[in-house]
Length: 445
Image (cartoon, rainbow, N blue to C red; front, side):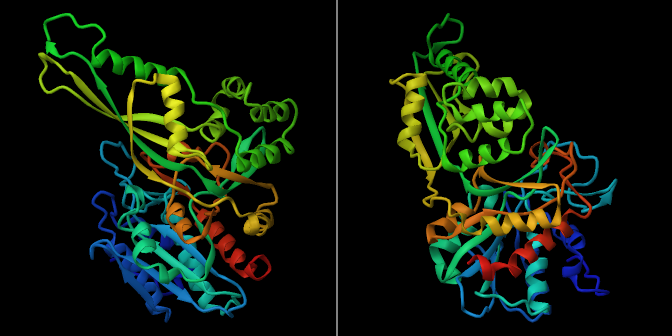
């Protein structure tokens, strides 16, 4: 375990806390989050806070701790995961589990996703306890395993087997949101208020088999090629959901001409795709949140090089917009690819809640206070988080891991990639933002 500097409380050193968390190799699979979770548990124990450790597997525990409030408001949850994605076959400038500070950054797997967020929350939790912050309701901290592989050992397990640990919780903060996106010189801070839904699919393609030496036209391989080309050249239909409409309108109100009119054009389904094409790289921010999406990720077929396969199986990662169901996805895919295609839904994780904006204004005010350039906007996350599991208990999660990132730092291209890193000071910025949010819960809940 990493040694702890006792010269000052660890909550006053969020960057150091982040470095310590990065140094635990919690690559999932297999996870092995135990030592990392026990490290957080030791910090709480030294501060006089008891924590409960529960899990499906003793090597993959989850930590839940609670600081009692006055009982005047619902409890508030801070939830984050400590497992990380693989670094295999990536070329890193610095060791991915070193937590090294160099060139103005803290380097390592999980620096962005999401050990920085966990460091912010743990620091704010310890500070709230140490300074006796007046809390209107209980404050709950959950440090969980297995988010990167679906949460079956983590948040999903907690919600299904230990829901009592989250009794009374109405709102939560988790990943993602609170970091700047620069558009036309403006510094927008998206705050996640909703997320897409996981809808994983399997497609079976059939055709005549045969010897590899015989010409084959129209077989399963040809069908695979046509399907992939069609998906590559086309988008599914445009849908304007309430959180996306709010985000686009808020951004357009602060953008200069002609960018403001261009962005507003995204709200017209008839021209939205043409606008996205016109926006180029800048349009990637909006593309996935205007459509249900699907990407082929795994192909299985054929066992011998000289045998033409009669069946090919394709697994696809689908993501549904809020308010849409697997039936919508199947209908859109059949319309695009043909009604005779065999498509099966293999996993659907519903996000059942409509966005509850009750905490949004408070979170936005904190960002504006810490960064005068900040323009907070509501945000629909194109991916999924553990928020979907807590939503089954009626808990609304806000993506709020604030980081003041410099212009030119591409969050989307750095997360999960080689050389994942975070600017030095970003964890302190976030920990202060989270603490200020906790101090204002009495006016928001």
